[in-house]
Image (cartoon, rainbow, N blue to C red; front, side):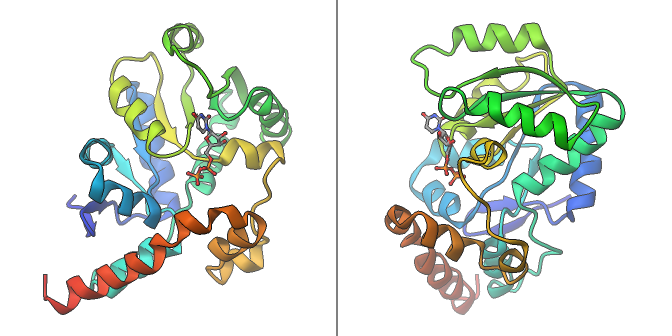
Length: 241
Ligand code: UDP
């Protein structure tokens, strides 16, 4: 299926339910491929970073993580079905894996965070096996790769932030004994409770970005790219691209 282009990044126009089904097929195929969940910030980063752009294009599933991408696509005259936040997609997959005693490996965030996240996930998804954890601050990923290979999980959450996680997954694609990898940014911090996600009402109003900005004002520098994203999308539409 052809992808929906939003400023140079192709997105899969799928609902969350469709993305979860596709992920389960990929997990069963066990080819160790990967899923990316770009937001507008990552799309803007990819414009200046060809390696990131290539890593995004090489993913088996590219999800519109957040309202910004869906709005950008609409401005471009390419309506998409819905936003699919990476964390919601991952929870959907983990719920299904839990039903069959499937396993997940948590990789990323500061030391100790993945272990706390593991406790939350065990409670939230009884039956889910957490087959290992590694923090995201390393100088040599060799020992981590060995540990992941030994654990051979169904699902590997790679939470190193962008573009590190996308480049790492592209490098490892097809080389690990895992079902499927997904790049999930700060999600382990959310599971561990060190970072709070916006309340559901804010999520429904597509204001998750504003909540995050209010909670973490230091993100303002990164978020300044958001208006530019909208302006570029409008410009491309006007130029009739
Ligand atoms: N991180 C990491 N290794 C690094 C840099 C970052 O494990 O070298 C982690 C960081 O601790 C955080 C996540 O990656 O848990 C990125 O979080 P951020 O909120 O920046 O990501 P976003 O969700 O915005 O992509």
